[in-house]
Amino acid sequence: MAAEDGTSNLVLQGLARVKFGSILQFEPFRIVEIREIPSDCPNLVEAEALGTKVVEICGRREMPPEVVQKLRDLTNPEVLADFVAGAFVRNPMQQQRLLEEASVSERMRLLIRYLQAGSAG
Image 1 (cartoon, rainbow, N blue to C red):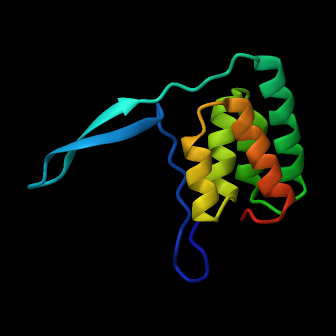
Image 2 (cartoon, helix red, strand yellow):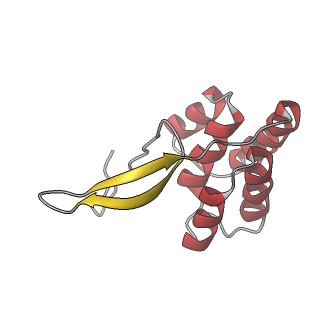
């Protein structure tokens, strides 16, 4: 659905976290070497509990029904953290910090801090 100004929000969900390496080709389009960055989630129970808190905080915001449903449907803490970060965090420095964090639980803690401080979307 387009906004009044004609813009739309697009949610893109990737398959893996990656880091860009060297540029292999510039023309006719760029090809870049990438390396997968695995996430760290040694304590799934903790990550899920933090995820519940993130969803609770997001639930206090006014959101389109499809976003509310998406939040309810996400059961994987890593996917939830990345979705909420993309949908609610607007500060580029905070977004970068979240992207760089390998620990799912720490990503959730950062999200909670950003959301509660009101510095997110």
